[in-house]
Image (cartoon, rainbow over the protein chains, first blue to last red):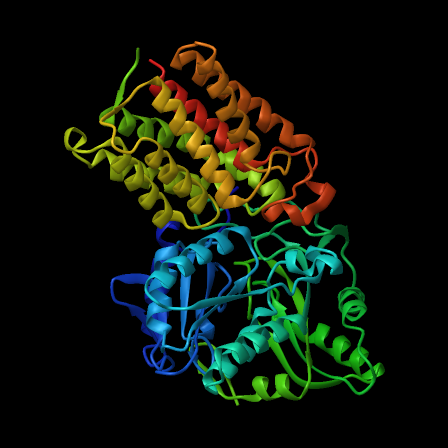
Length: 335
Length: 213
C-alpha cells in the first residue's frame, strides 16, 4: 500500500519545496542564479570572512537550508531526497560563500556526500578557493567509540554548524574556524530511536518494516537500520536508554554544562518530545550537569518517520560563546 | 571482428537505462533492507539522464570518448548520491581509455570496461570483499580481460564478465559491509545482497547485450 503524501509529483518534490521555501523566506534566502539547488544567505558572505558551506540530501528539513543565514551557514547545497548533491551545486555555493579567507565544507559523514563534496573541493581549488572539510560524526550508535571517524552525522549538526558559523561570523582565522568546528563535533553526542518508517516521495512505500510494538535503537536518519531492535518502552525508559549511551561516551563531571536538543524525526509530536525532555532534564540535574540551553522540536527530520533523537553538546567557555553568538536564519534564530 | 561506433555506444546507454528501469523496484527493496531504499531511484535517474544526453548527440560527429564524458557529467548532475561520483568516474575513465578512437574494437571495449571498474574502485576506495559494487565490477573486468587474452571474442568475454559479476554479487550475501552506509550495520548486513553489486550486474549485463552482437 502506498503512503499518503501531499505532493504533486514525486520527482519534482525537492524543487517544488525549494520554490516554496524561497517564497517564504525572501529576507533570508536566495537561489544562486543558474544553480537552483544552491541556496545562499542574503546576509552572510563578506570579504575576509571564512565561508561556511553545508549541505546534503533533502528530507531532513529544516536541515540543511534552514540553517543558512547570518551567523550560521553562508550557503547550502541541496541534493535529492536522502542523496548527496552533485559537485556542481556545491562548487557554486563555495564560490558564492568565498570571501577570500577560505571556505569550510561541513556535512554529515556519509560516503556519497564525501565523494561529491571532495570532488567539489578539488574543483574549487582550481578556482583558487581553499576548502577545508569538517565532517560531523555525532551519531553514537553508528560505530564504536574507537572508530568515531566512521560515525554518521545526524541531529548534532545543529550544534556543530552553529559553533562553526559563529566562528566564521566573528571573522576568526581559517585555522580557528576549523579548530572550533572539529571541537564542536568532538563535543556532540546523539542517539536516536525510530518507531515507524518514512517513505520516499518517489516510491511512497515504507522504507523498512517494524512491528506495532517495536522500536529501533540507533536508526539512521535515512531509515538505515540501527544497532538493535526491541520492544517499545515508556518515554522515560527510552530516554534513559539513549542518555545512558551518551553519558557513557561523554563521561561528564558534576558542574559540567551542556546544551541539549530533543529532536523529532518527523511525525513524533512536541508533546512526546517534551515528555522526554522532562526526564532528560531530571537525569542531568541528578548527576549535577547544568543545562545551559534546550531546543525541542523538528531540527533534523527523516520525512515522516516517527521517533526522536537526543543530542547533548558539552560546553566549555569558548563553545558556549559560539552557541550564544547571535544568528538569524530562515528557520532558526538565536541570541 | 566487432567494431563499436558512437551510435552503438549511445545504444548501450539506452539498454542500460531500460534494464535499470525494469529493475528499479527490486533495487530499492534490496536497499531498504540494509540502506535507505533509494538505490533504484538514483540509478534510474542517472542512467535516464545519461541516455537522454547521449542520444541527443550527433553520433556521426562525436567520438566515443566525448559521448562517455557526456554520459558521466549528466549522470553525476542528475543524482549526486554515491552512485553519481562512482558511475561518473567510471565513464570518465572509460572515456580516457578510448580517447582519440573513432570506433572501438574488441580490445578497446574490454579496456573500457576495465577502466570503468578501476575508476569505481579508485573513487570509492573499496576493495573486493567489502560488500560494495566493486564485488561485481572487479571480477567482471578481470574475467573479460582473461577471456579476451585467451582468444575468445567480445561476446564470450562479456558473457564471462556478466557471469563473474553475478557470482560476485551473490557472494556479497555472505559479507559484512565495510564501506558505505551499510557498514554501520555490522553483522546485520549478513545474508543480504549489496544493492550496488546487484545493480552492477544489471548494468554489466545490459552492456553485454548491447555490445556483443
